[in-house]
Image: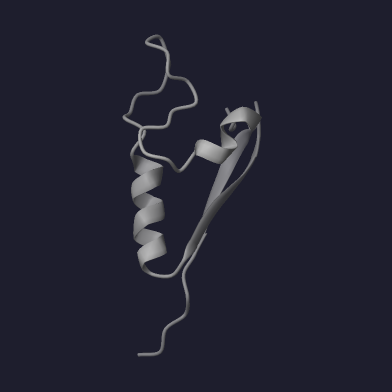
Length: 68
């Protein structure tokens, strides 16, 4: 369904949910994206998203290339 404009700055915070009502359609605790960001940041990577409210969201991440 996309990320509302007023929620974009908080999307990677712990326990953040765009719809915090008790009648929301999606379940969850609001920890998943924070966990992803923590792991990716620990590997010197970056995570982000592109979204249009009402049209969906695309999440992406980048990790540095390493030499083995």
